[in-house]
Amino acid sequence: MPKLIAGLGNPGPRYANTRHNVGWMLLDAFARKHGVAVDQRGFEGLYGELRWGPDAEKVLLLKPLTYMNLSGRSVAQAARFFRIDPADVLVLHDDLDLEVGRLRLRARGSSGGHNGIKSIIAELGTEVFPRLKIGIGRPAPGWQVVDWVLAPFGPDDAATVAGVLPRAVAAVECFLTDGIEAAMNRYNSVGSE
Image (cartoon, rainbow, N blue to C red; front, side, top):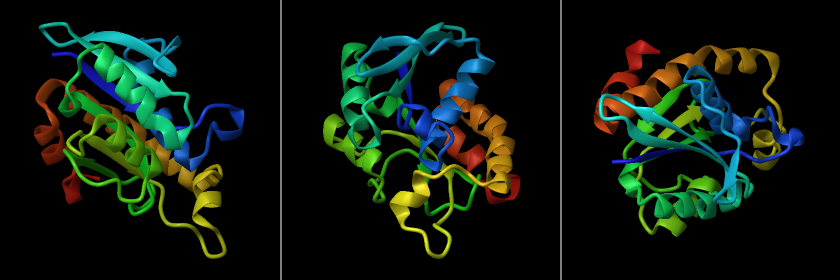
């Protein structure tokens, strides 16, 4: 069965290293490790393909270019075109409720207030799709949420995120090889951060 890995973010240099683009950062890190160029245009985004595992399953890597709040349009188009079940769509995104650099995998759930996830739920018509969340922390005092997520990481937080990306890439690989339950068991455990 084909799978889709969608990294959420906003296009353009203005947003390149912002907290909201950590899903793109992870997708780029995964693509680099596996030698995949995510540069084909389609599905209102950029995508690339690789083959995974002994059965050479097709895996589509997707970066929606719709801006965060409309991410579902791109994800749903790609999923429908390749006939990918929502349960085989892994969405990589930022999470305010997790401390910076913390990973959390989920097999399903609500949007948790994340507009990109809200859009994907609306377009796919289900909450049953896996996610890998990367913590960006709550806004510092005096910051509004929208300004916080659209601001670049400070030096310490940038280093923390860079340090956790290899582990997050391994979590994506585990999802592809062994499924979401195995990835959750291995990468959500508190003592293995």
